[in-house]
Length: 304
Image 1 (cartoon, rainbow, N blue to C red):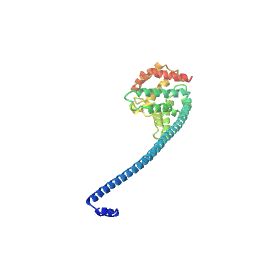
Image 2 (tube, one colour; image 1 turned 45 degrees about the horizontal axis):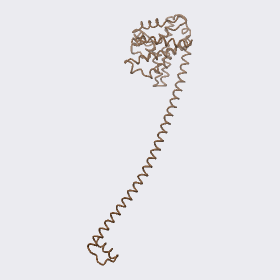
Image 3 (cartoon, one colour; image 1 turned 30 degrees about the vertical axis):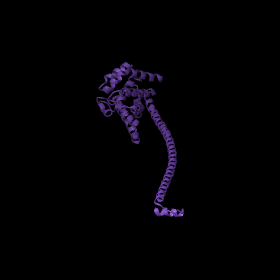
Image 4 (spheres, rainbow, N blue to C red; image 1 turned 135 degrees about the horizontal axis):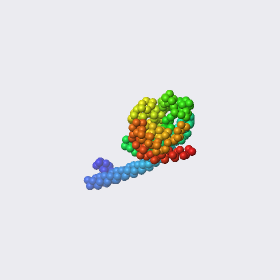
């Protein structure tokens, strides 16, 4: 360091190089070095701050673009989902409409009208809605169950397409042999829907339709058909339909009988509590019987 200072002094023609001069020069050089270092640090910091600011702006713009794209993608996905749901509903409605048309064709062969189909569908839904309020059924019956029983209940007698007209349209009482043939409609309907269920595994609508078609003539005490099921071995949907189907049949006019009053029909169902029908379901039916009466009358009048 001293040699450097002495060299500087000789360049500036300093005649005497004293220790004081050397110390003073060292202080000046040290101060200059500090200032240079500080300036370099300031310049470096400024440069870094500038670059950081530019990078932040770039990242913010990138994030804005990404957020915008995500929003657009979300809207597109929601729109696509709506389109898919609408198409599924359209296909489902078309399939159900076709099934209902076939059911009405089958029903027309025994002199019935579409009123029976609509009444049983709405009465099943009403009974299911009332049962849902009970703790015993709150975890079984949900919105999907209620919708399914409304849609699938018209399939209950689809097996009648396999019953001869001579039996189906007979105005009088059936002979024991004819009644045996008539009873096969439950198995015919079940077999038809079983074949469909194999193609559409997991379809709850078809599954419930199968339960109803096969089980709505079973009786609580095990004396029904086709399999002699009893109690809770009978699917709930079939137990619901059993009450609704008998109530509708009792109140409806047929070629061989006049329609019964609501009071007489309700009394007959009450008498079947614990033998023909699930006693718990009958209790709910009787508790809300005025609603069932009014719904039956409303639908019937709409078809007049």
